[in-house]
Length: 261
Image (tube, rainbow, N blue to C red; front, side):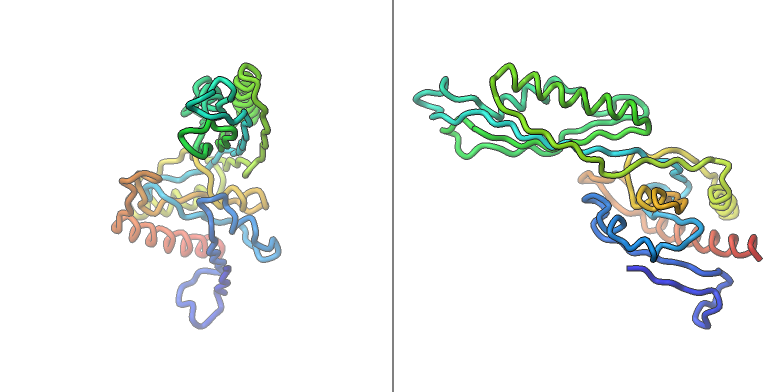
């Protein structure tokens, strides 16, 4: 959903110029809403993606993410009477995963296996298992090396245990980086200082709708609205920070209008 607010509209009481508000869906599961938007509707000089994090932090870069999906096919057998006739797909997957470098690989690269599904019953040597994982990096060469490494561990484990392997690799989104000297970033920094906050500029390890919008030619920074401990049982939103984020956006809008007046 996109909403266009024009600066000359009687209902717009602020000197703000034209504003395009974009509400997307399914961001967490793969930026599907942003990706599905009609490119013709995205007409803006720059933008901001609101996400978790502190209000005084400006995220000016985000990595490329590549997804890995693999299916390992072994051979089913009765687990109690003749387990030696089977090839345990879960065991093969475990060997492969145990050999992978996962977590934080370096300051630009991360990798994770997040889903593993397989097996039917405890008395059956599992024939099939599916695993899903990912790798991210701000450096494409490092990202390629990590994905190759993960594939190699899968291939070695399957070859050792005489299991079949089917792999699918797909890029989810591409990286972006906006210079600290860019006028959009300077605009946010100046607005933060007016709110007596000290701007901190750093890259993000996660992806957001900003990846999609930057890929479409609209410089988009990621701004925090007070969400913390994301993707954990302790995830929470600080209401005072959220209110401060609103003040920041209002200041950015009015400051940009003053600069373009």
